[in-house]
Image 1: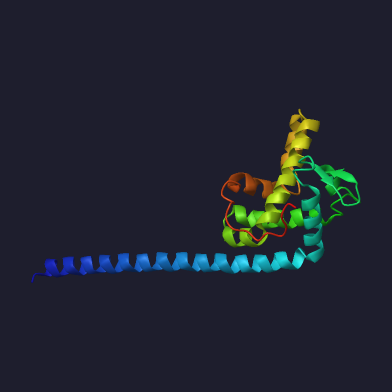
Image 2: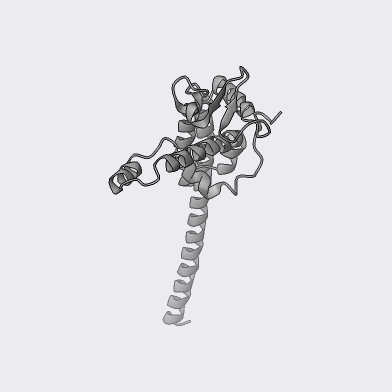
Length: 194
């Protein structure tokens, strides 16, 4: 064998080893990212369980049942005591949400930031809190519609202000608008329409 043939065999061997090493490195990197994503998801679920307690879940169930589509309008809550309140009342002090739904939406908005960046396993978050997230999105969408009706023509300065200081549900709505049609998988049901 000549020296040039040996050099060519050596170069091909090095190329094969480099390609194999690159494939193994990329595969390991992807697996590590998937594991990190899974770890982050479980930590997020732990955070959600810590910040959305039984009181918030009970309030959610109460308002879910008070907003029965058969007996009330989409933005209307017929409470057990006979009182009727509206979506915009949910976020005012002493309103039907009693501040708990507002806090729940803020927590979901915080989590939605990571969901928008695809840092979490969406299916696991959705399974645990999908019903609550979709109902909160329904409420915040109604608030957005009310705001558009009340303030149909904002000045440029006001629009810049609104963009700079996002609403407390901006990231949640952004995530749900992109993924609402995908969010039909299994979810834990906290309550059903009676």
